[in-house]
Length: 332
Ligand SMILES: [Fe+2]
Image 1: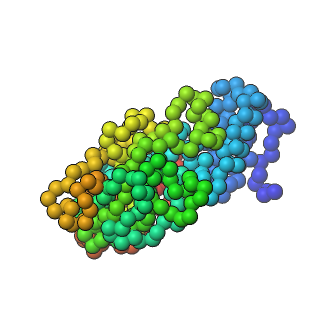
Image 2: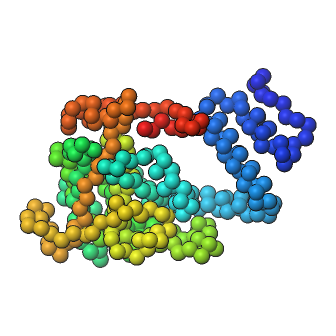
Image 3: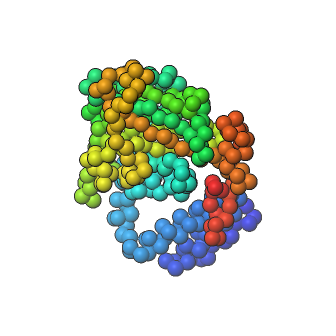
């Protein structure tokens, strides 16, 4: 036991348990971990006192969390689902990745991203092979907040099949489908062939689904397509595009919809068919994504190197800062 560890009083009570847990944790050498645990214990204890939590309720909660963990597998993440349906995922992303007005908003990652998507599929690649799906071309640009195209951005994309299932939800999954990793070209553009997204229920055959049922909530998400952007010198962006008018647009089970991310599936203008080699029956999903440069000394990384040549290796603002007396990640 470290010499600095405080001694507990002879008796712990409803009134002194919180301060004594803080005291026993006070030897933690990580300021951020110490702060997080202190606030977590404070809120947990206050919640327990406020609700007069019973032993049977606490036991039920433990059993619920145990079930959430037990159903997790390499291709099923029930804890992310739980975080999503509580609105926590959206809140964390909004706090940790604040976006200036001119940039693209983030939204929930969801539990279906994998790391086995075909890497750096060529522009124009077909990423969904579901023959029942309605053809859709995704044609987008990636720019910085000054409007400069950003080449070489790693773009992870994924969607369900036409029945509303991700590939990982099929027991006989032979390999990835409906997902890929693409890269923006020298003009900051990327495009690929996919299918029109459809609404789908989040997995509701586990403890999170049972919770939704008890809450009287439906498990559906509106039609959407996932994107994840990554390039050194820029704040990572996890987001999705939502098809306007989709059912559940205003009652998304995981609170992911944002007005700026709702798109109309466009009609083809002159030259589109010839340029991308798809039929006129193909729907078009277009969007201009804007990434935020990581800040260094209060200056956006993309402003430091002068135009498109200044994107690489600008470093990251890591560490901890104090806001209103609270220790928070120094993300901006
Ligand atoms: Fe999704």
